[in-house]
Image 1 (tube, rainbow, N blue to C red):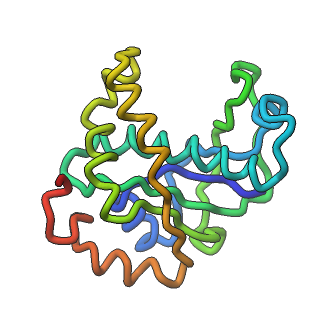
Image 2 (cartoon, one colour):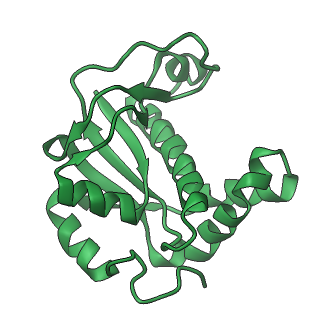
Length: 178
């Protein structure tokens, strides 16, 4: 099953260098029964995109918790053999699940990440993350605006070069904000 794991450039670097994503438990997103029921008319590709979009949104929360890094959403797509069943507390349309295993790097299929042109939009959303969680309309609008930014696709063999280009703090020589 394909899962989408929210991340940041710093966490991606740690996972790439360690050869695994962890520690468990990991929050991931996938085509869950709740998502399939909510989006009944969607085909598999649309459902996968919806799950990835939820992971991208969660990545903004990780960025909010680590203000020193580039404001670019990162989503790691991986194949896992088993996914634990939902605990019954999920809402209709929720793609979130918890993985109770460390995911080996060899299970990573691709990485999706914002381009540098998305930094201002994503940065604003990260700065307003807490307010968005509390229902502030302007903050929610800023968070929703991230969905207008496309994530770029990177093959796993491209990740070491991508990380090297971004520098040790995932900043590509910038202060992470524009």
